[in-house]
Length: 117
Image 1 (cartoon, rainbow, N blue to C red):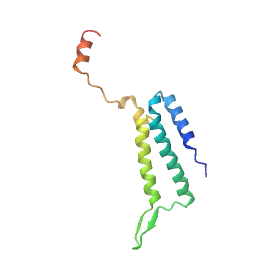
Image 2 (cartoon, helix red, strand yellow):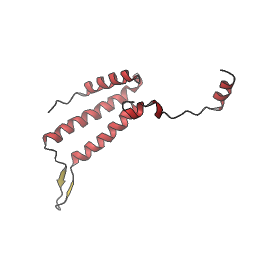
Image 3 (cartoon, rainbow, N blue to C red):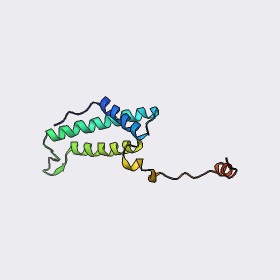
Image 4 (tube, rainbow, N blue to C red):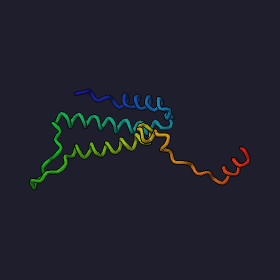
């Protein structure tokens, strides 16, 4: 079992990865803080889930089985991590230059470009 990195370590690695990809700006630091916190929570809960023997079901008072609360939380955190990593351009889909939405020229831009400006 590995030790879960601290939130600060995750933040430093995230900033380093973003700089390597050429997408880091200081204005993103609050978003990076939130992302680091979510990743830390996910890694901590994943470690707990492993230690507890991957208990993926819990039983109700009526005798039925349902998804364990830790599994539901991990699923939610995965979705959040994916959303944040997409916004921070940390996954292949968000970094694909062919995936960019073409910008529509406004009337002023069209007039200026027709004048050679």
